[in-house]
Length: 214
Image (cartoon, rainbow, N blue to C red):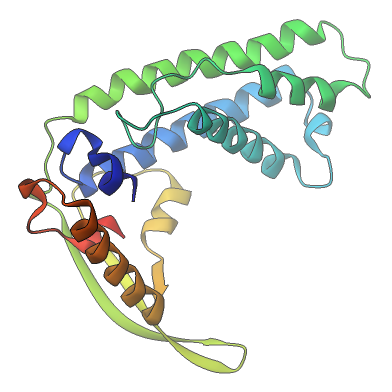
């Protein structure tokens, strides 16, 4: 709904942009993951959860920290003001406090430095996608039924046809398994339509594609 309330500089919602944002985040995640394990042992991150999940949660928490300082007037997913590392640094210090790690501060700072450099590169990369459009994007919906607690529930499954070469396995799996319970889907469509009317959006949004927003 950020697109609606903040108008995202009156830009159109494009599936192509969202796909590239997904690819950029996956790259950021993979680089952050490798940086953490290169500079600190995996045992540091094996706290209640498997280290891979802990590292993923660290990156997500950092992103939410950025959102808390962001006005969403520019890119809706990647905040352009990203130099907020205090919480991340504090968490890494907590994780390493029970271990005797040589050059601990240097290693933690290297993780943060790697994250900062790669995030800055993402913001540069995003500018390359500004002139893209959805001419080669096609969204299809099919109705499927899946069993939940011995009850068959009707879902809407989205099929996004595109010509982008997506190599990240996790992202490919997500895109191939986008399903929403039909009753929830209808509520979302209704909410979006009401929001557009109540916020009196610019005429450029007259013919909205609710499936893109969802």
